[in-house]
Amino acid sequence: MKNICVLGLGYIGLPTSALLANKGYKVYGVDIVKSTVDTINCGKIHIVEPELDTFVKSAVNSGNLVASLTPSKADIFIIAVPTPFHDGYIPNIDYIISATKSIVPYLEEGNMIILESTSPVGTTDKIENILKENKVDTSKLFISHCPERVLPGQIMRELVENDRIVGGTTDKATQKTVEFYRTFVSGEVIATDARTAEMSKLTENSFRDVNIAFANELSILCDKFNIDVWELIRLANRHPRVNILQPGAGVGGHCIAVDPWFIVHAGGDDAKIIRTAREVNSYKTQWVIEKIKNRALEFENKNDKKAIIACMGLAFKPNIDDLRESPALYITQSLISDNLNILAVEPNITNFNEFEIIDYKEAINKADIIVFLVAHKEFKELKVKTDLDFCGVLNV
Ligand SMILES: NC(=O)c1ccc[n+]([C@@H]2O[C@H](COP(=O)([O-])OP(=O)(O)OC[C@H]3O[C@@H](n4cnc5c(N)ncnc54)[C@H](O)[C@@H]3O)[C@@H](O)[C@H]2O)c1
Image (tube, rainbow, N blue to C red):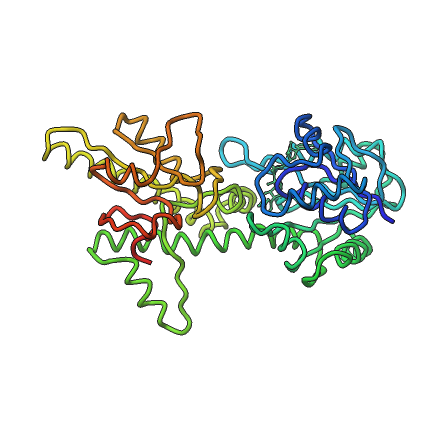
């Protein structure tokens, strides 16, 4: 039986640890947050993800999953720590660097180190360099990147079923890492080199971003030309080789809104489309804010009172409670800070520390202006008319 040490027990590291522990591996889960470690050691979870509670409970009860604040000796080390950006969209790999340094005292000949965090090209090589600087003989280790591509809400299934890309710093590292993933992945595990594996994950998210930017740009143009963008896209998609995505209030989440910047930062002026897509998607959010403000002003001029505006949805995409990098949240915050009279609605969240969240039906009844920002399923059944439907919930 192999021992595995997983660094980072968040949305990726905890499901991975629990899955591996249920497959019979002995897993040492490591996190720097004590409350996270304590919660997991009680067989409980600190994040929302379907089925994860059952996996963690049985993993901890079997003794195969133990969480700790410090790493342990193991055969395989998996790094699943955050990779955000610094100000100015500069990739922040500080968490990877500190996780790498933290395992130095525990490394032994033949160990495998796998970076799962979404990372700028060259990060896996950097891990090797950091180890060398810390006097580790890396010729006896197998270092690889295996990016994660699960969809929140379906993580436990996708961890097993998705195809995986594995790229090592050497062919032997790639081969050994592929063999490991084949022990628990039913999708294909495909071998490449470390840099291609890193770029592959960034490319997947940039592809989505560029295609959403096309839809968002169309939505702005259609508004100018007085054309219904939802009908336009439906019609254009009747072409057998056209598949335009849906526009929205921008692009959010901690992946698609973040990872393309890793390419732009390294690619400079050669990353033209990828940078422009980021800018178009951010501009769409500002455009939505201006649209709402103009409508509020028109209402005020006509009625001699301030409009009550219902902002429908705060999450970064439909039917989840995740607010990370959410354009809908940003729009609502901007309108509130500009002193507009806002009723904030998010059916997937009951309490929010910044402002009150109210029931969606109550908001509809009270509002003078209704703005749809996220196409949550609850909104689809509402019989309201508004042309400020930025997510197509009434049209698609
Ligand atoms: N969440 C997703 O859906 C998803 C999907 C694909 C890829 N990813 C990528 O996976 C990586 C992890 O994302 P996540 O969503 O799990 O992040 P997360 O913030 O949910 O979890 C990361 C955890 O790492 C811990 N941590 C930070 N530094 C550490 C250290 N030195 N040692 C041990 N633990 C440490 C944090 O306390 C946190 O609990 C990121 O690169 C992300 O882009 C995430």
